[in-house]
Amino acid sequence: MADNALTRMSLAGQMGVSLFLALLIGLLFWWQYLSPAMEEEKQKTARLENLQREIRALEVTANKLAEFQREVALLEAKLETLKRILPPEKETPDLMRKVQSLASQSSLLIKTFTPGQTVNKEFYQEWPINMSVEGNYHNLGIFFDRVGRLSRLVNIGNIKISSRGEQTVSNTITASCVATTFVYVDTPAGAPPAAAPARGGARR
Image (cartoon, rainbow, N blue to C red; front, side, top):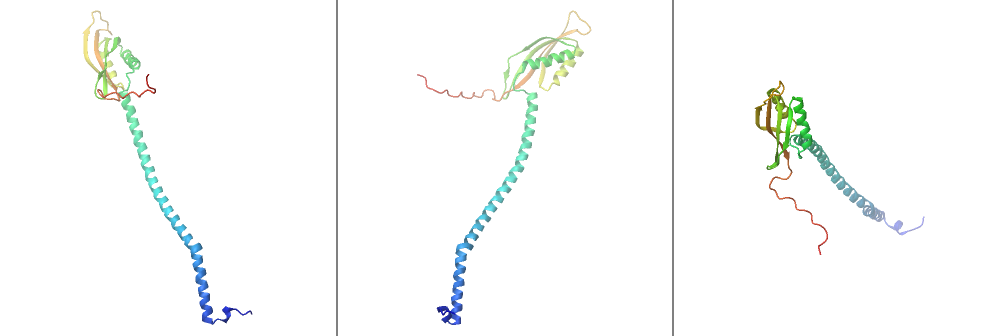
């Protein structure tokens, strides 16, 4: 066996050198591999915890979103019901067809149907319609009842009834009234109108 410095050392010296080399190798292993691996694991653990918190927050948001969607659906259904009662437009032809149909079903004859000027209120307009019909008392009462059952809100007022000179069984009176319906407006009455957008280009 070749003679070297390590073999010439005492047993304690050889053990000391071996321990030093082992410690040096351990330090190199920790510095080159173990420490970076531990730091990477720490970063991944922190990232995982952040992702888990984000997932929990998203789950809460998703649960709330479903609740909000249900509330929106209910509000939209209520809005549609309100639009039938208080439409955003006059819808003159449609309303006239409905009233004429109800008059016909009640065995009445509409003589006049004259829409008047709208009256502005805070969030709606009153729209009076002057009407006159011919028929009898019983059928007139049926007609008013049917008008009151329309999905659209219609109030009957200023009723005036007079007897006809020439009467038949089904035609004994002439009645006039004001049927007032209502129109929803987005902008309250008296509110300033929205400013018109500026047109491009300067005048010369």
